[in-house]
Length: 304
Image 1: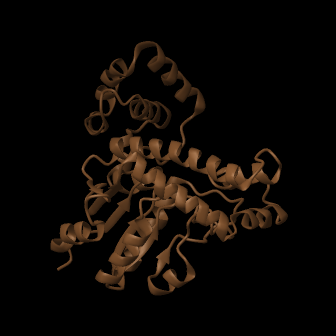
Image 2: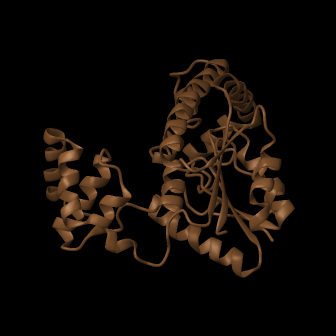
């Protein structure tokens, strides 16, 4: 087993479960959260506390400045390196977070490792819009049968990537994935889930706690340090505070409601993504099941 992967929507309790599992199995945690990578952004990202990190070693937290980027490809390389490092020291790797693109790259692999000429990409975009994915899929089977087998005839995005890669590079895209690693092998994926009403209650409580813990002051400090125009401050929880500080949101109560509303919309998108990309995952209903017990029982055979 390469790693236990724990994901789920915002406020589903992923961090708490992962830390407890790490304690039980002598594990270390790799964060798959696109916001926890940033320094100085602690409250709004629900980052594990210093005390929690002192008890269980965490990776890929506080590794970037708020004005720096971090792609899914960079995450993939960093996460695989961390997994190898953890295993070399005789410990277990636990990947936890809700950033779907990061986890998709780790579990399912990246669709392309090199950029493609924009003109070639546009050519296939136009054809797909006009004729549809099934027409292009027949083309793909002729030039890269292996890649075609791995994807759906309706997955126009990946079909276009396969064809544009072949036309631009002169080699098939599937050749870029023959590195001896089958994506998904060794990753045991768990998705924590609950009803909309239950998650809304948790989101509301967490948002109020963040505001009470000093979220507004955290954002003020970021602005004072010159990070006002950075992409990271457009994340949910931060952009609303910026609106509050600039007078577009009038009260703390209105601030809480804005964050809750936008978080619930984000959760809906998260769930759609998880269902489409992690079809073999074990879904855990946190209202009816104990995630800790379910995960430990499921992976027990891999831990001996």
